[in-house]
Image 1 (cartoon, rainbow over the protein chains, first blue to last red):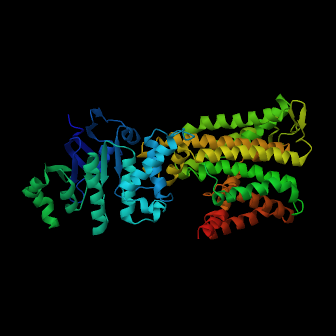
Image 2 (image 1 turned 90 degrees about the vertical axis):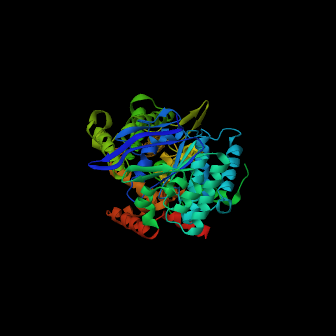
Image 3 (image 1 turned 120 degrees about the vertical axis):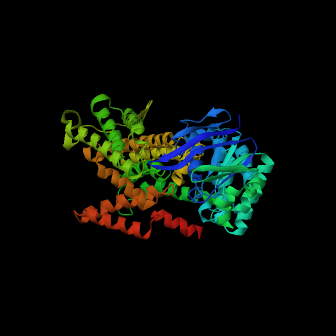
Length: 249
Length: 317
């Protein structure tokens, strides 16, 4: 059984079929990219994995746990963390506080009305470590809402990592970014993947990023799986070229 | 922990003003009961702001818990026991129990729907107090009782006839209550509330059961609101259904907005402005509320972050 096992999921919105019988198996430590033209159902597919939407048919399981009926906050406790296409951070708090909140949650302090003895220093060290890993130390005391798009995204990724997830889901991590920011985020994701052997599933538009990061790629078109394989296999696949890469090139 | 003078400056200013208030308030052309009223209203507004400013949830029905505290205290002194301490305890428990029961019914709602349902629940308590003449005195209010002196063994602290003593009694309770709220807001739990205010979706995707945390914040807020209500009843030796009416809830929201919802002491500043304006304007004109309204509109237009919000921005620049 694979680490993340998506079995034949579909999502209907009324008569619209956004995702139609998609299966995907992701192994532990793998970095998987999901690509497809606009309207291919990528984000809906993502929302079925994270539990934001219940599937009309099919099932999702993580490390052997069937996730049917498990709401998003419980999925986080099972080790799933995600970022959003439109960055979701705490805009009026500093970057350090943005990171500190998930660190405390991961330490099991979510309902603690006081800081347990000795935990203060542990939390502080972990926050500084994450700030450093994400290249955020220089902007740690600035309000997250006033950062550049790329820094906000790096902050959001580190907030997700602070939860110590076993599966990291990234929804278009470089959407709307310039070349420099795109490179910086891609480098960050690559480093996280290499150093912590994190299992990552990401949706991405930028082909350079996808071919640079992903171990395997799943291609969706019109809600259906079109192809799956290594970046080299996908590049060589004629169906994919016709449906997708052809347009882009 | 180290003592950071710069960070502590607002706290020092607030406490010096509050502790010395009986010395100067009459020279400032006012009177001690007005100072007590400011502290009581500030406690209520800070209790509301725990939910409004720090959890990002707007309740328009907090008068219910203010009134439950007030009636709880008044009814205890009138019918049960001539003890100020028991009156406060009964009033607070009444508010807390009501909030605990109503909370689960409303925490799924957000924004204006939450506000509307809190008004509806608030009005239920208003009508009970208004109609149940035999017990509450109905529209005429609950009379024929007085706050009682405090007894500590052989020592008696006369808060009944000595207004300055009563002021310090109220201030001591205020200090304890705001210390607990400040402590909670600086805890990991408190930070999850601020996280919900900042971005509910992000907080949910951090594995937080948002409705549970809002319910807890709601209960804490309503409990301190009930505490303010008990002090309000003791201050006036009287309580009537207007303490439960939805416009009273609106008064607390106005106080928070005027003073600044994002500043811990904002509601205190708002309460000082509101209570003083009310006292001054109502001596000039029966239409004083129109003028309070104008001040409120001016604050919202020109200082959208409240009076303290402006001061804080100046300090940052």
